[in-house]
Amino acid sequence: MADNGVDSAECERIFKRFDANGDGQISATELGDALNGIGVSSEDAKRMMDAIDKDGDGFISFQEFFEFAKDNRALMKDFAKAF
Ligand SMILES: [Ca+2]
Ligand SMILES: [Ca+2]
Image (cartoon, rainbow, N blue to C red; front, side):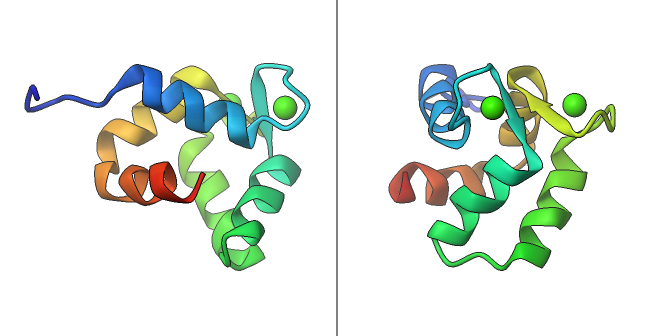
């Protein structure tokens, strides 16, 4: 695997699990629900939302999610297992 290798297909799969209503963006509620489902507290989910939502519009686009994934590969592996 390439050193910077984040699997975009895998990333997209996880993104779609978070995007419950399928509108192509992850809302704070969608993120919170998904993370609560795997035992992450609402407070940690909110912190994660702030970290991923770079432009601060209150939604996570796939681009934002993908950038976050590249910086947090260990976490993405956990997500890949959980979702
Ligand atoms: Ca959505
Ligand atoms: Ca955003």
